[in-house]
Image (tube, rainbow, N blue to C red; front, side, top):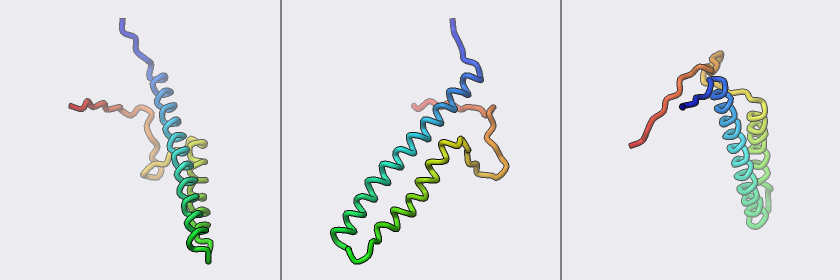
Length: 98
């Protein structure tokens, strides 16, 4: 009595897994952004007060974070070659470690 899943169900589950992974990666990126920039601001205020250099990575990294924010929401996947889309019928290779 083996029950299988259809290809459509598998693709839906795989897409949901990719979405969850992208969201997890984004939240990790946000946490690192906040922690590291807080540390840089503390160092800037405590030791090197002449120039607010900590604003430079705050703004530039913020631009990258903003780009990362829009990537998971859009569902757009970047490919290595222009014009080549990922095939929905790609084979899945399972390996077993020894």
